[in-house]
Image (cartoon, rainbow, N blue to C red):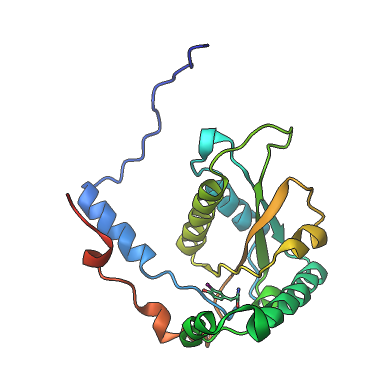
Length: 219
Ligand code: IYR
């Protein structure tokens, strides 16, 4: 086996304060993130989106294969096509695909099959997972990897003052067709990105997060 080549860890991030203070400060930023379903049409520059994708692309991944592609859509015609196809799937979901329990769980969030945000938000980012590398090689821990990259993307958008929504129309096959993606790429998440509408409201139920002692154990 060939020995890996190593380089020193340079450019270390230094928060300039204690880890505890920095962790608390970052929490103060992240805890203000909200999933937003109503957007302003205020433009967001392509360069901003490029920074968000650079950030997503910095995520760790299985064997560093980076099994993701982010298709960033601003073209109103394509957004419309995506919206119409997504709403068709969602109508089937809300009318008969979702069971009673699932619909009951969604009730407090007020979601339904209408997805205007796909057209109103200036950008819709469709994250695809790669089931093979572009040259046919293996990829590993695909869902974990793409999930992490999407998490980075959401955090980056939030840090830029932008809102997001993780939308999962199901099934999502139409996105491959509309966006002309090859067989080895599978739609993973649809993420509108933009400024929240001025009069945006958030379902109260989405605000409650589990207390720390319910999600954390120390041993
Ligand atoms: N995909 C549907 C339903 C939906 C499912 C879950 I789980 C949510 O947290 C929110 C919605 C939709 O987008 O409306």
